Amino acid sequence: MAQRQAMPVRIVGMGVLRSWRLIVVCAAALPVAAGEAPKLEEILRKLAANQDAAVEARKTVVYRQDTLVRLLRTNGKLSREEKRQYTVAPTESATKKKLEKFEGRYERDGKLLGYTEPGFEYKDMDIDGALIESLTDDLVNDKKSRDGFSKDMFPLTVAEQRYYKFELKGRKKVAGVDAWHIRFQPQKPEDGDDWAGDRHWKGDVYVHPEEFQPLLVATDLALKIPVAVKVLLGINLKQLGFQITYEKVAEGLWFPKSYGTEFGLQVLFGYKRNITMNVANSEFRRASAESKIEFGDVAGPAGK
Image 1 (cartoon, rainbow, N blue to C red):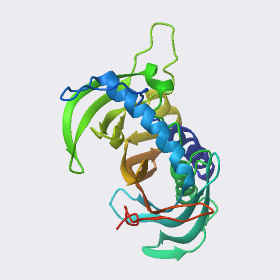
Image 2: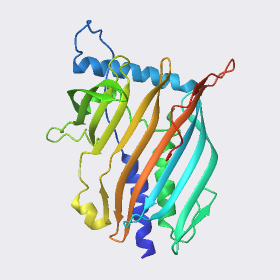
Image 3: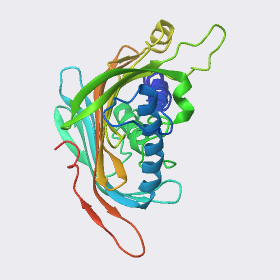
């Protein structure tokens, strides 16, 4: 039975979950006359241009990142959890992360036992251990990204817009701001055309009306796991989606502030977990030879 369980863990952690995609796409800016409501195309153009500038600005920022991943049994009791604190520093094209603190706990025989090193496994076939390590790596450890999140998850770029359709839904208060509300979903491919391939997310993006930066992005899975996958591999995911918030931490610098997701996972009809994942970025400061400018705490540690 142990051998049958090992493969689905790799499939979920490195396949299904690593294929998460949030596609909200955009392009460059057009001026809007005073008093006029901008059109959807204009909002998307400005959003794309500002996102490119924000990504570039992040290469000068050092910050703290707190992550919390919990695996819960179906009765609500904790099976495993890990808390990590990183210092994240930029490079020219990516980020370098240093693990500052780590705290892990797992349940065994009704007791919660602690451990102090990532990758800890307390038995030969420790599915919880393999899964929590893979989930954490998929969530925040993209070394080619300047904020740790995969560019495929939050592209907000011109290149992806042809794969999605958008609808301007009006305005909604987000963090005290009367934001533009845009709904998106994957385009349906034409007959014989599979270019929409791995675009699986639908959801909503809320855009600052003056800064034209995202304040909040929330998604849901736009497709169902095929019956054949459920039957042959025994994999089922429920309520898979995620939410990310952004905040302005300095002039011209917007940064992902928090990220969270919660979903249910079932493998081979025996292994079941409810999973929560949260990330909080804080203590932003400039990293340069001349100075280090403290921006202050814009987010507390994850889970607090």
